[in-house]
Length: 134
Image 1 (cartoon, helix red, strand yellow):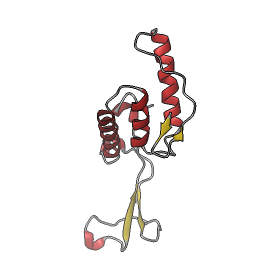
Image 2 (cartoon, helix red, strand yellow; image 1 turned 45 degrees about the vertical axis):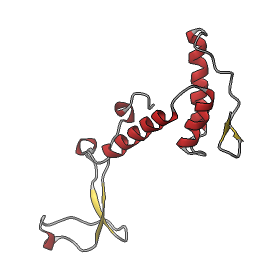
Image 3 (cartoon, one colour; image 1 turned 180 degrees about the vertical axis):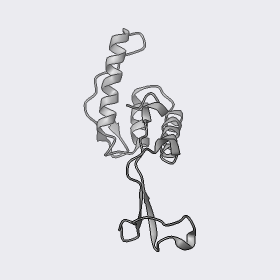
Image 4 (tube, helix red, strand yellow; image 1 turned 60 degrees about the vertical axis):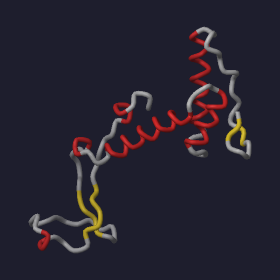
């Protein structure tokens, strides 16, 4: 299997099972294909990997890319949902990355100068957004 126009070879793939092969064989070759794609995720764009898979399997790359983009957007949006924040230390930083000691009041005129960052902890379960994400 090759990727992009420069024909960069991906790791050796087994011959993909056909739809008439036993379920164990189809599952095994698909698992192998998924592993190869995951191994190359850092070095190639998602679009290139989806395109490479589409040359081996009869899939719609447009719908696969749309699904991946949707899942990615849902994960990014989850970072800003208040229910995904949890206790622990939450604080503000100045533009020089110094920790702001605290606020005496919520009034803007009473706030310390140069507040630039809000630091918080959160937990996002990507598998809860899309069960295919492990």
